[in-house]
View 1 (cartoon, rainbow, N blue to C red):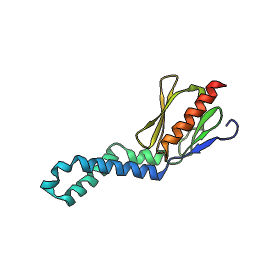
View 2: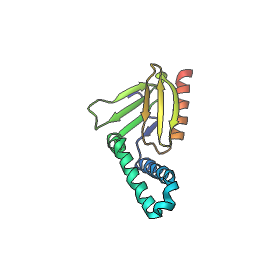
View 3: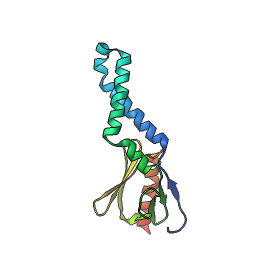
View 4: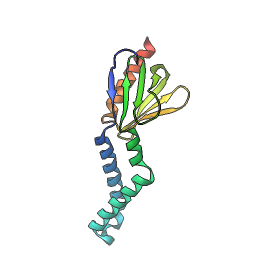
Amino acid sequence: MSLEPIEIWQPSLRAFGLRCCGVFLVTFVMISPVWPFVGGTAAFAASIALCVMYMFVLDDFTQWLAHRKSIWTLTPNELVYENNHEDMEERALPLSEITSVHQRFLWNVQLRLRNGTAVTMFYLNNPKAVCETLHTAVASEAAS
């Protein structure tokens, strides 16, 4: 790792919970046209069941389990990714390789790289602040 860390980010259970609640609310609103026919309690139960099914079909629970121990460390020159559950060593991404940083949904940050690939930082508490910090770090690296 190069120099002292500027920021350290980790996935948040709160962000994962908010994602689950968001999926539930969207599901509940989407089935709202059938409320008069099935009743509020049945619509609520169906929304919970569809939400849980959605989480398993799209593998959100395993994605959370895979990323919950991730650590993103921002240094003046690099963004370092560590995850003890993976068989890999820590990976350093030079800030000069990052072409854009933007918030994806309400809990993720996506980094676009010069080679055309993208890297996603999952389940962050305040992705807007993370984006601003990364924009600043990438701009200061480009200026130097």
